[in-house]
Amino acid sequence: MHEALLLLFSLTAFAADWPQWRGPNRDGISTETGLLAAWPSGGPRVVWKTNGLGEGYSSLAIVNGRIYTQGQRDRQEFVMAFDAKTGKKLWETATSRDYRNDRGDGPRGTPNH
Image 1 (cartoon, rainbow, N blue to C red):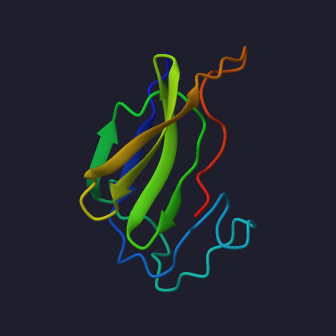
Image 2 (spheres, helix red, strand yellow):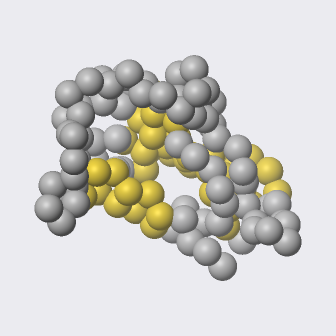
Image 3 (tube, rainbow, N blue to C red):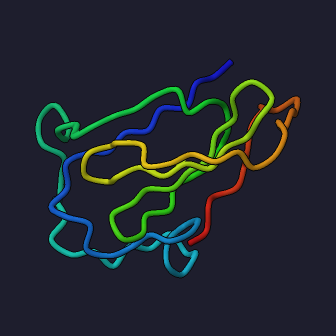
């Protein structure tokens, strides 16, 4: 079983939301400015991380300081929300039964806000 791991790296601030798969326009293009030209030696500082999200291939949606994603544990899929600054899980709700597939189990969608 593969366990999902969510990491949030140190960034200046979340200036723009990323409300759906591949961003605001679903094109994978960020309009953020002031980003680093290169990673610092040793990589960016980890602000927080979490595990135990379960299986799946869900991406993230970020809206109003909250991060939304999906996971699957046991025989249940969930949608969950985290505080983007602290990593605290704000809520989790069951959505559907588990999804099993020979190429990997768990949800494949991204919460859309």
